[in-house]
Length: 253
Length: 254
Image (cartoon, rainbow over all chains, first blue to last red; front, side, top):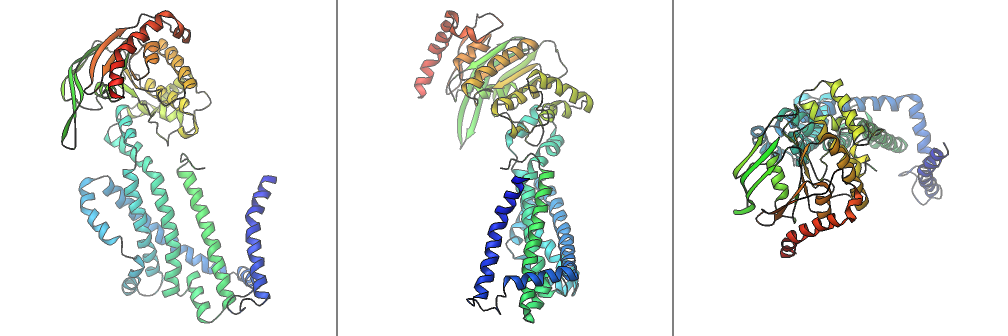
């Protein structure tokens, strides 16, 4: 308990210090309060948004779009990655396609999705899906090739056939690398969902940002930025927990 | 089972050049023998082991297995220098791997793996992952995994080379104790003369580039072997003999 309090305090102390400095530089007039409202004002606004339920409502929508898009992009990437990573002919066919399309910033496709799907959730979900697809596809392909060859030899020597080597050695061996692709995909999904909502969303956390900017609701803008940051922290913690469950053997210190 | 190795050659192709790893190796490994193969690095001793294990293909000659089988396991199983444990499997499931892929029922193979955990002295570490274990303990797991596979012939490729001196001495004694219990045919590659003498019934001394058999030295020490034997006259006489056989090879390459 004492240990927990100490570690909580050591994390909290720098944050409180920055908030205090923020409050001070604004109150002392060193920074124009119009561009940077005092920390206390932003926190009060944040609390009000939590209290009224509007914060929860906008993040519920954003989280849903993100999760849906991620699920589509990740499962497509996993299925395709495993298929082409385990088959030489498929790899030969898809490699040039992946190499040609990978460098394209996926955000450039928003307009196309908008044309195809019209305004609403689908173009946002499609943008998230296509952006998460590539990092997970690449990490799956890399992961399948990253398994230590000595483990393949050892498995064969112990009597495993090709199928067993694939299922019992290549796949679990690839999992840590695939997981790091999933983490990258999560980070990209968060960026893309917020950016696309700012651009074409009519609801959601990104839309709130764009709206607050347009109407100079500066306290709302800052409160929402903080909320997105907190959302990101929770999201990455969640991914860490999932990783620890799926890859308990990975050596991390 | 016996292993008949007849006129075996192995060449590798590297950047268009032929590399002679083994040149005309002929050797019989007797039933229940503990055969040690000693040689300088690059003499092809590990290659010979990979050929006996049919992990690599020979370029010429033949390797035959003769005689009745004692187990329903595979002909050979390898213990690797770098342990080659599966990092995502616990100690118990690493040891059960061979039985698992060869179709043994789950309850039976877990039971069997537990038995070998006791044999190698790892009770209490069943559910640990390899990265949580020391090098010596990892090699115990690797040994248990090979034994649980119940091969006719155990192939060991410098299994103790990565360990510190104390752990290594301890593991040599452990290995002798376990071998005494099962009396499996063992082909054991090492570059340590003392280890080759302490463990083996015969030492095959190899020369380097290309790998050839230089001399086969019988070891007359009685069994069970103990670490105390290292200070005896007889032990010294054999190590001196092995040293003089290998000396020219080592100095030629140093």
